[in-house]
Every structure is written in structure tokens, then in C-alpha cells.
Amino acid sequence: TTSSAAQTVIATAGGVCNAVAFWYEAELDDEMTLSTDPSISPATRQAVFMLPVERLVSAGDAISLTTTFSEGGEKVSFEVSGGVVALEHPPPGKQVVQRWHFGMLNDTQRNEAFYAALRNQVRGGDHVLDIGAGTGLLGMMAAKSGAAQVTCCEKAAPLARAAEEIVTANGLEGIVRIVPKLSSALTVGPTPAFIPGAEFLVAPGRDMAGKADGVVAEI
Picture 1 (cartoon, rainbow, N blue to C red):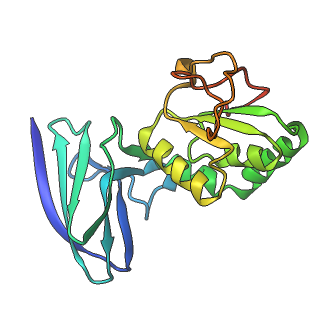
Picture 2: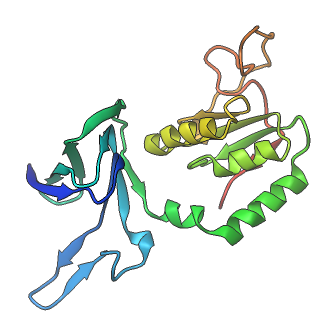
């Protein structure tokens, strides 16, 4: 059983509406409420729902937001209407991106440490495998450290889709390849013959042409 609720929100700035950030409130009794409201809780506790349809909006536009949730509240989805459709994606199996990804991306000290390690370890011509690539940040660092090819695997479809756009925006699509699946599901084959015009030497049906020279992963 599902329930829906609709409301209208006003855009405070122009741009692309492509996600909904949300949080929960649990009323335990008349006096106690547990909340992940960003104004009172750490930012790592909120989540972001990636919309399958991106819309161009201007400041002051009225946007209709419909929230649908299951009876137990364990599943939630959002639908937005209003503005001009800019891009439509096929709905992924999972559209919620956990908020802790944002904290990692903004952790300058962490990112600089990873970049320094990659510059020290990656050699020219290496093939690097990035496991749990997220937005592709570490994979791009590996490319800029000299890797000839970087394979990034990311199981969350919204993140993998974003990573592809980010890699292209940084001009690294000829080196960094995003594979939207678990590392355990990657298929590796022998290096195929060169195919003129192909960006990556990957055999048909294979995710990687051969074994990686180095692996980037966070444990």
C-alpha cells in the first residue's frame, strides 16, 4: 500500500532541477521526535533522490512536487512537474544517493592525500581499476597521474550516470570508462585486436580488456 502527498515549491534560483534532497522525522511520542533535519543533524544523515527527468527552471517558478511512500515508510519516491524538460533518463533501479558522498567530495584533506598517493604509484601506461568509483573523482585523478586507461565500476546507477557526465566535462572520456556494476560482476577478457576508431580496446561483451596494473578502493 502506498500513499502520496503533493505540494508546490517556489524555485529560489534558475538552473536545472535534477534531484530532491530529503530527510526524515520520526515522532516517537508526544514529546520526543527523532529528525535528520539538516538544520539540527549532521549532513551525512540526509539523502538525495535523483530525478529521471531534469527540468530547466527560473527563479520564481512554481514546481509541483509529489511524494509517494510505502505504508511502512521504507520506500519513497518523488515526481516533479513544471519548468521545461531538459533531459530524460531511463529510471535506474535505485535513485537515492546517500548524503555521505557529498561529505567525501568536500573533504579536501582526504582528496589531496589520495591524489598524492596516486601520483606516487601510477606509472605512465598503467591500467587502473577504481572500485566503488562514485562520481569518478579518484579515477580522474589516476588519469591525470599518468594512467593510459582507467576502468571505474559503480553499482549505483545515478552515481554512474553522473560520473559519465563529470568525466566528459573534464575531457577525460578517452581515458576513463564508467562501468555501472559491482566489481565482482566485471568481465575480463584477453586484449583484442585494435579496432580503428575505438576509444577502448575492450572485447565484445567484456568490461576490461585485461588485468589492471593498480586498484583504487576505499575500505
